[in-house]
Image (cartoon, rainbow over the protein chains, first blue to last red):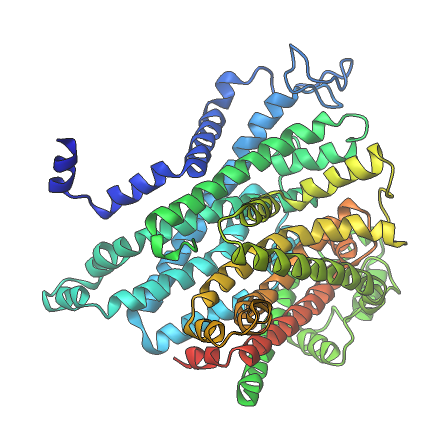
Length: 290
Length: 308
């Protein structure tokens, strides 16, 4: 019975994709884990057992126990609280910087692909040139010149990560541009704005989602590099990268200070990558190599 | 082929100029002069210093001088440590960073291609699943986690290998593994993908029909096609290795370029940063160029696609 209904109703491409995603166990694990981490990051101020900068020098570094599930650091700060707050920062950098790169990349790629011709080749040439620059060095230079603040990190990372997005969107738009439905839009006299927003970008949305979900973990990784080198998030704020960084210094005596943030960070990266891979298989079945 | 490589070479040169312009501009707009610590010195002394470093000249003259010096291969002197030149630091640090990068990349290519090929020809068996899930781990575990973990296990707990430094092969093992693993994993994945693409092609079927031995089909017929994607990936990989080596050099306290760069960044030693950025950009652009030309040489079809 339900079988026939299923056939009669037919499925939209999005429903098909969602169905495929639901069957992918690793991707679903990633989805659930990421959702939990995001939820915890949002409600951190409500659930954090201690304050993230409250020091207790008499206590010092103690291993995990009933009061402090993840133990405390050398200044007696509760590690669980610091990991929760660090997650807030890491995720925020991941999402905001990805969003910045998403906006720039999609606009750049769409405009280049839509206008075509000279404009296209100049715009894509700029992307090629920027691709061959050693960006980490420029990000470090920006940090040196303008001081280390978190907004600069967003902008700097966003400015690096938009390049592949621009390429992907552009090549998709170039292909779509040739198709009849776009011709039809033109002959119906739709405005360019409407064609770009409603017909082109909407059709590239799948690719955009896939690539966005894979950009977030790479941004978080980049932020952790910067923080590890001492050029990212500054104390008393902390991100997972800076927690790992300070944990490494004392890992021989107090290994938990390094292990807990490290494991949480790695699991989150895993989940985001699984989810991204799963989305690619679901939204773009032809691209998967199996 | 030759035409392409020359065209590509000519295209690379302006990029270097852009690098010089960007870094020069950034350093000029930086708040605070390079000699802020000398604020207390009398005006005459400050002027004397400014003159010595030609800071009293108009900006465009400074830029012109700098550009010509760079072209001559002179990257300037440190503002923080008088008498120390950028070239000196590069001569000290670069060979070490190079060596580290070379070991890491060789290991990545060797392991990556080997396991990628095995996974492709034994698709959907344990020989496919195990290396590929390990590769997934390799891609995800950041080096700033893998490095310290390896140190914790092999150096601190087992006591087999030294914790840090850059002297004997024992010192070099863990840093190279840490730096190379992510790339080994990635190369394994793209090798597998490339092999799977190639193995279903008609010419492979023809080779099989002719009775070519399976090992020759893999080595001579498939691998070449599959490796073009790997070669094309080498350009970006070298750029990534550079970033990675900064972190790895810090973890293992290796006296390479990364260490000097970070030091210069903390000291706000502008000329140092500028000089090293230009040097790194030059290297990266060169590697990108080599990788691109190699990819075309291996797969001439690509040059047609580029023209389109």
